[in-house]
Length: 471
Image (cartoon, rainbow, N blue to C red; front, side, top):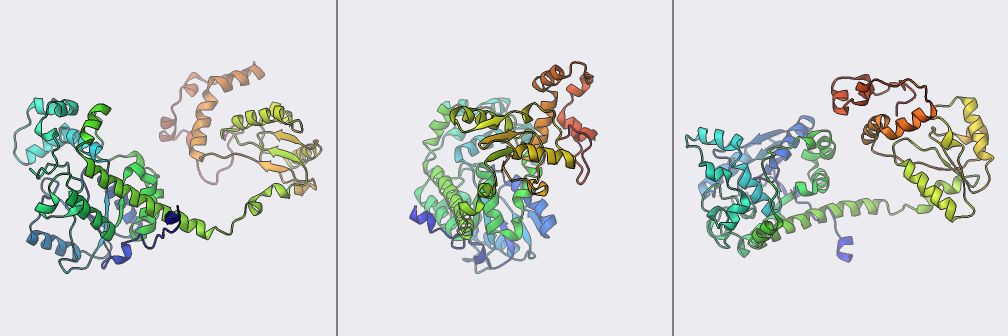
């Protein structure tokens, strides 16, 4: 606990060690790297930088010889300031090549989930058909395409047998996530699940990488990227959740569910790969915690007493001007239960039986303030109504409470609630002669309502309330 409290974001940030304003993303396949590239492309339009994706033949660069490493490093160093270079390539040591160091980032994924994802990815027709046509190779054997992963493991096929110490067999041998952080030393880095490769990869992450994130912890990854690499990732969370999160890149709907028994069987051979993945996750969480501790240190002057407005009330009356579709029914049930439990609480039910009319005229506001002010001590008043300024009407101030909800989720909830049986049963019970809406209105789909430009689903800033029932 003491060590956690001593975390410092500056000590965990390798971005200041960079010598050039170039971001090097040596992306690991099947970790969601295309999702991050798309995010950076959108952010680049705002922050004025370019994203260059290495158009490698075959998609992934194998172990590079020293001259090839030098050439690639030199190409990256010569990029303009404010460039992102993304490539499926193992870690490159710029310092060893006497070249200025870029900002390193990468993404990781649960290693077993990753190999399963790769297994089905290369069997997807939109991948293998154009890929084999480009290289003039014949189409794969239908049996190869149709073999499920669990069958592959249980039958002991070579591609699904993960033997510790086995060497890299071909470019498409993607069982090694560690390799992308270890480097290009064939003897030290290619043996599968080896202790030496693990230690080298950990050391490189700790010394070189600004951030190694994972989509399995999206919010933490985006927050750390924003704080530790702000030049490239300022407002990344806002950009991502403005729509990019719903557009997954390289998503494969053909991947079936794999039994836990098979996954556990495979995990037994991925011990050090899993250890590396957990190491990267732990480092990410340390970086995130350090940020939150910094925030807490800035807020250490806060006091619960100062933040509590209950002491500003003039009367012992609770005024719950509940917003619609925020869970106020659940709060009402809680207050009813508390009324039964505490003898000195009284729930005034006048507001619960009133028709909803949130926007009151001045005289009505005054009447409401006077009514609430005259309630006995220990009373609770609840109504769907806008905030009322008791001071404006020279009335003693009650204790205000309310609930809120994500505003988009709230309007979607209201859209379906208004069409639901519960609300309509109540409404037509109170008003049996109320004109019923058309069947098409009840069956209206929210997505189509928004896309079609239907006025009900157009939320235009600074427009007034179109009708009483708009929430």
